[in-house]
Amino acid sequence: MQALIVNEHGPLEKISLGAFPDPQPGKGEVLVDVHAASVNFPDLLVIGGTYQHLPPRPFVPGKDLAGVVAAVGDGVTRVRPGERVIAQVEHGAFAERCVVREALCFAMPEKMSFAEGAAMGLVYLTAHYALLERGQFRAGETVLVTGAAGGVGLACVQLAKALGAIVVAAVSSAEKAQVARENGADHVMRTDVADLRDSFRKQVLDAVGKRGVDLVLDSVGGDVFDACLRVMAWCGRLVIIGFAAGRIPEVKVGYLLVKNISLIGLQSSDYRERTPEKVREVQAHLFALYSEGRIRPHLMAVYPLKDSLAALRTVQQRKVLGKVVITIR
Ligand SMILES: NC(=O)c1ccc[n+]([C@@H]2O[C@H](COP(=O)([O-])OP(=O)(O)OC[C@H]3O[C@@H](n4cnc5c(N)ncnc54)[C@H](OP(=O)(O)O)[C@@H]3O)[C@@H](O)[C@H]2O)c1
Image (tube, rainbow, N blue to C red; front, side, top):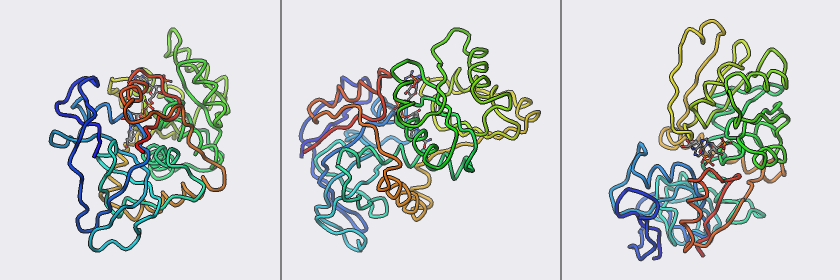
């Protein structure tokens, strides 16, 4: 089969398009003819060799796919050949075929396209876990989302808005501000400012009032995380999703003590391993919200497999608005 292949970790330019052995489904596994796959920031870390889980080389990257079930292994009961599904994998989505665990393979709503399906996996699951499971969001609360025009960020904006939040989006450009607004942000803060520390505090408190925000969903880290800590309400919670800015923040914990602030970690892939039944529940909720027209992935661009490098570069260069998708067939 045709696939995007990583022979050695390194810069994106080292990946190649070529023939790769067809995967075979084992017990409890499903073989999917992949139609579309979406790019996630962690793909860059996997390709570069700095991610926490790295497969042996050579391997096919890609974590999110949508396609049609081609065959099933022994013991598979929930999906059938011919069914349209989305699935999440640790790697292997940027290829014509991929083997996935039945537990992480979900029949798609009828009106959802393959491109939308591929874009509705990891980032929406992560946003759901961040907002509800880890963030313990309650309707009416103020939720600040950083990197709000990115994949995880825009999913957080849409989901928080759909579930009754006052949404505050933090972004680094006018174009990203517009996308955040169009997807449900009530207030938009700019992070591309001189003196982020003080300017961000003023922007946020001017918008939501002196009390500050109840919940922060942060996928950026670095200086943006530091600025967020200064705008939290008493008993506020901050969910740590990622460090797209590159710096893992360090916290003076005295600050948490004096304001009763909770810092909460999230690694959504752990739920896949530890509580697959919970993943099914969350995915069903996301599909229901999609079918009701309350959330919908924002597809910035769709590239054919041969132009995968351009798709990956859009994310690497911090240009992505929502999601970029690679069509495989
Ligand atoms: N915890 C989990 O389970 C989990 C799951 C999925 C992803 N993640 C992590 O969440 C983060 C976001 O992932 P994503 O797929 O949403 O990424 P994305 O679509 O590329 O969005 C990342 C956002 O971060 C901001 N950013 C700030 N500095 C950046 C830089 N130097 N390079 C790129 N972006 C930068 C950008 O917003 P502005 O330009 O507006 O600042 C961008 O929109 C990543 O760190 C990823 O590893 C974690």
